[in-house]
Amino acid sequence: MASIELNVNENGDVRIHEGNKSVNLSFDELQKAIQSLKYDEFNKVFDDLPKNADGEAFLNAIKTYKSAREEKHLEDHLKEYKAKLKECKAKVYPWLKEQIKEICNEDGFYNVPVASYDDKISGSVIFDAFKTYQKEVSVWKDTRFDSYLRDLIDTDYDAKDYYNSWIIDTIERNARMMGFIDEYLYLLQEEYNDNEMEMYCDIGGFEGLYYDMDEWIGETAITLMFGTKEEQNCDMGSINNMFREDFAYDNPDDRQRYFDNALTYLVEQQGHTLSELVDARYKGTDNRFLASVSQEIDNLSDYMGELTLLVKMKGNELVEFLDAIGKGEGNIIADRNNVTIGLFNEWSGAGAMFEIMPEKDVVLPCSMIRNVQINGERKSAYEYTVESVYSMSGSAWKEAEFNKNLVFVRDPDEVKKDYDLAVKKFDKYVKERQEEEKDI
Image (cartoon, rainbow, N blue to C red):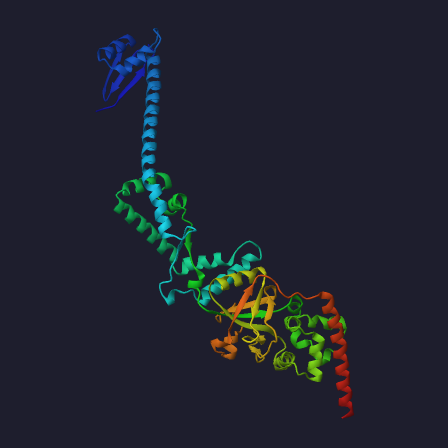
């Protein structure tokens, strides 16, 4: 059927078009025609028109009536829509909350399982995440290492897409079994634009995927290289240079720069002083720790060297520890009876014997860790690893503990006094030895 169009001509008559047909009616003729048809809706329009109304007034009234009727239709549709939503929500919401509760842990996370040993996170993935984290944390202090690690798991292991799809399929299958899949899909489309995860989060309290790092990260070998800020300013040559005799008559203040290094920090943490180490090197000592430090220095075969600790960790403790390294917080604690610590040169692939023998548990601050190697992974091809240089077995990496609280703090005044004394003793021993050589 062709649509009917109404127009008003310049005489006030109404011209009716239907397809190729048209007819002109005066306003009175139009009114009589409509009244004879007993078209109640149009009659209501006429009733509201003034007596002197013409065809144009009629058309405007028709438009007003049509607009009101459409608005009424919209209101009716909206009422129907709201009623259906209410009905769907009453069925789906409580059930969906229970579904999320059954699938997820008490915090609303789905605990992603480790299907096999091969699924465990590799050292290379951990290391890649740590490198990215170190760059970002220097700018954004509130960032966390685990967020970068989880992002890599999502992409490298395809875990996010796989398990999100599994959750969606499980819930939809259960909705079919319960007999209200239509209500479920209606809510999903109308309220959440077919975004299942948003719906689960909003209604069921779903928080996302959770990777329990105690399950995902196995025992991991970590090589920690330490250096104070002053030591790094001296191009990591301080340990070798602090006992070089050709520096014996330099300015004492210049020489004390070399005393500020991670090895002397360890000496002090073990309850000794640098001046005691000077005595041990020139007079000998019965102290096992000081003797081992002196021997380790002698065995350092290159200009550069750094205090290096071999540890192993796993799971959430490793994640927390790497996060702390990036922020320079807390410290690493190694058992005095089960520790591998010594001097290493990562730049030339040289080092000593890793035979320092502590008297106390080793406590070193994370803020002093200047480089990290994980399972033999390195930052560049120009960097040697302990694994590649020494071919040590995995047993060389010992269990260690991360502690958030710094338990050893040096007194700057006492350190300065000790350094002054060490310089005096060093000069004295060098002069004595030189005198002895003249007499020979």
